[in-house]
Length: 185
Image (cartoon, rainbow, N blue to C red; front, side, top):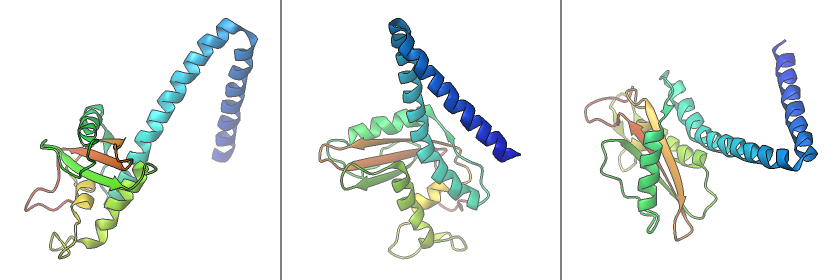
């Protein structure tokens, strides 16, 4: 039943999309208006897709600990973008001085995706000991603990390609995590 509904929705969506393409070819003025609307829709879908590339892996990790999902914050995304652009010249992993939680990722080259950064941070899970609330000696786990911090509810992220051609990705969290003496969950 659900599969048929999903198929019907997909079929309907395809039909509507194809119908809009046919109507685009019918008139030049309609074409200009429709092209503008389609461009805006595609841009919005691309932006929403990029947001999901950050949110989904974060929230999968949080669900594993039975924590509520993070919500996207335009304010935090704007801040993350501002800070990433400040670092665009040197691509240095230098934290901002905000009161937000912050994870930074650097990758050689320009082809890094949001999920790559989240995966790198998630790999630190094996270095975190919940019982002692410590990282394994000489290992970092604070990016992971920020992701799963129970009192962090909002996230905003940004990606830039630096002048060197390398990638810098930053995510900010509100409220910040990694409070000394507290466990993440």
